Image (tube, rainbow, N blue to C red; front, side, top):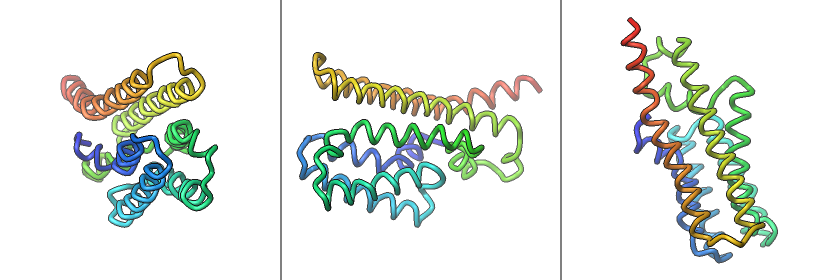
Length: 186
């Protein structure tokens, strides 16, 4: 998956992060509504797929009810933990159930005959596991951000975006390195 494909796949979550950057309840409500609409549109157009789609549907539907309709302040306050926790859970669950979330996207850019190859499947598990680590790292950062205010907020934000950038770079370059190594073995 290319960099822009990755951005598109995570666009509801990216929109959510960008819109909520003002840290007001109104911005949070707008972010939930916009992200929910984005998940639905991307799901119907099959741009968003697999576990990441269902994680987005569950997360944004829950927040549509809890935050937008019911004004639940506890949920709003713990939003970073809930978002990272949802992504981490979906990622690790996809591995445990034998359907790594990255494979749903990788299949869109690879011929059908490659889908069952051991290298393709192994690469999907490795990439999904890497994303699971990224989301767990962001979960820990969000927990620290909420319960330990001794560090400036921008440092937590930098750490989160840094982990995501590392995940994106890994997603873009690891398959290319894997293919290069495979061709060198032949």
